[in-house]
Image (spheres, rainbow, N blue to C red):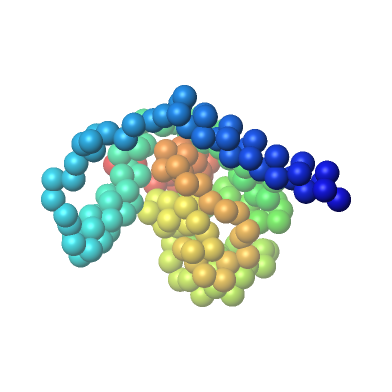
Length: 176
C-alpha cells in the first residue's frame, strides 16, 4: 500500500515539476499594449441598424451577383437538387415538384403534386427575390414547408442556381 501512495505522490510531483520547468523555458510575455484598439463604442441600436442594412443589401445584392456567376455554375449546384427535383421540360415530379418553368409561376400550383398546406396557402409567385429567400433556408422562409433541404448559405451559389432555373423555362424573367 505504501508503494502505491508513494508512486501516486511522485507522479503528481513529477507532473507539476515538469509543468513549472516548461513554463520557465517557454514563457510567453503578454504585450503591454493591445495590437488593436476600438476607437469608439457603439450602442445596440446602431449595431442592429447595421445588421438590418446588411440583410437588406444582401437581398438586393442577388441582382449584382448575376454578373459574377453563370447558369453553367448553377447547373453544377443543381446536382444537389436533382435527387428530389426534375428541371427538364416535361419532367415528372419526384419527391419534390418538377422545376421547369418555376420562376414566374404561382407557388404551389402544379396540379399533380401534393404540396404542404403552407405552400398552397402562400399566395405569391416565384420571383427572383422569393426564390433567393426560399433557397437561403426553406423552412424559415415558408414556415411549415415539407422541403427538408437545409438551404444554400452562399449568395453566389443561390444566384447561379436562380440563373440556371431562369434558363430552364419557356418565359425567362428579365435579369436587370
